Image (cartoon, rainbow, N blue to C red):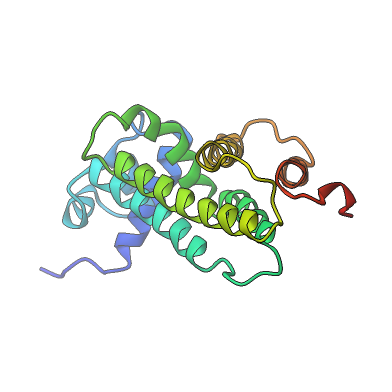
Length: 201
């Protein structure tokens, strides 16, 4: 018996991602996924254990891409605020690059966060860790160099993290898009942190 082609695995993931995002995880069957991918249903079980395994692979891939792009943000910038601006841009750009994956993550993961070993809990925990480290580094250096106001570090990191989470959830859930959100978010952060922000043009 011939082994299924390797590229079918990606076809299955792509089909599952689109269907999960369009009609929900619970509302999607493996039969529907197989039809969308142009395969027979048993081929899914050759590559994956089932729907939960598909969901896990999709979430792992989405967060891995986000982390990879975060790791490639410029480490050397003229100001520390540029790093924060880059992080805001990344959160909004990633939704454009992976709309279905982000929608799936922000719509389905919240109900799965109680599972301590689940992929959603582990991925969100790692994202928070990375964001905290990135933002804390920017703020500490900016305060030390006199670029930023002397703000309470932990509280400000939590506030900025919440802002970023809100931005990605709003875009990811495909809610009504308000023009100028990115620019307003950047300017809000600039005026809150940068000492000479009001002189910025």
